[in-house]
Length: 298
Ligand code: CP
Image (cartoon, rainbow, N blue to C red; front, side, top):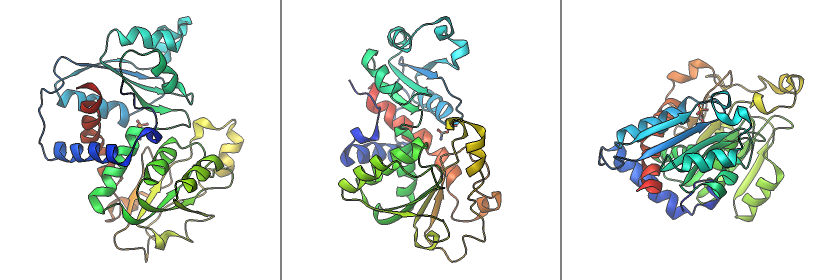
């Protein structure tokens, strides 16, 4: 069965195939009844705007329908039902399940009990593979993934979108620059695996030292909800901010991405600059998730 749990399970060929399908969908070349009669189960045990609503939109555009659990409190998990039993039951209602869960590894666990494909929509600080697909899609709209310098900025310790994207970029001709506040660096095992895949990874202590050498700047927010206490969060909060002043002298083809939501890490004045692509990136979620749903449900 075709579970989508980690971007590490993907080859470059398979990712490119999904992105090529998404491109055709973006050009309106798709069958609006392709998933007619199919049902997607949405299980979101953490808040979401983009992932949830873009999966719903993708399903509607392909003629399918969604059923959902919006939060733990609205499910029988509050009565003590396990995730395993919940997944077993929803497998009987839906043709695929999208799961967002606060615990790393939850999607992998769910896939062991599901009898339909499970799509990981974020498992704690683990991975968010469908986000990565739309990130790659957005980069590809601006430049081929050849000889590209990509900067990952922010909470690289807890940021699952950064983890997934870093692994995916290691399949392409990319130099990776990581820029994180102290204590929020990319986990050493991730860096080690990227280097073992022959990726050049350079760690920087400030965005100022590398901003002019980047083609893509991927900004992430500090994942407040993953910190053990508020004091440690406030120790690093607001420690970086992208402003128009910071962007003076950057490469002409620079694009700035952000999985969103943003808090204060990108000055709203940046939104009007040609580098800002994060709202376009959020829009790209629909054709990319349509392509992914076709891949797992057809
Ligand atoms: N990018 C992303 O996962 O956004 P949501 O948390 O709103 O789904």
